[in-house]
Image (tube, rainbow, N blue to C red; front, side):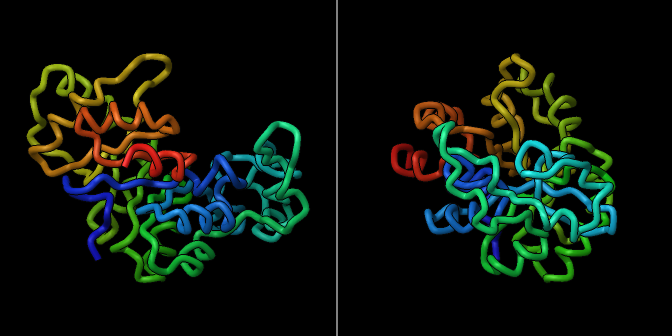
Length: 256
């Protein structure tokens, strides 16, 4: 299959941590809702447990999103599984509709098995998780439908030279800033897609400039996290291909 997030054709919609505005982020329930909405891919984050399992969670700890606490890399998978991943999610600041309903932190293996035809964008949060993440993807023969990216360029090294598609790191974005500002395309890049925020640490980034310098290399630019349809339309006008959103139904209903 051709991954919908690669190439300069189409305008893919990507569910950020699934359908995170309406369900507990990075859970099977959130991913299922995003797939039902009709996203072109789902985005997720992975960490490694103390016993070497790749789990889907954004933070290095359980504290923010579950009823438990502790570092993921110091807990065994069985301990991570005990956490209620729906405990803290609230759509209105008052109610907790998923608390106590059995929503747990999934493994990457769970996601690949549950959604066998769905393209994935996987953010590797630490370099320690890279080798195991590669093994899970290859074990499912899912290299054609997975893109792996990371803020940490070191986390990308185990994927170089493999059949797994790769996205840019934060270092790549920084290195290309001058090019984006001057409009001079780089001689080459070692990633297939750039996923970037429109603002970094309060400073607006030249999104349109990145689009222009990467187009000659056939590299698309996708932007996160966009929940305002007006912003999505403005980014599309700059040549951005994909929109990564917590609320994909809102974006799909008004910006497509």
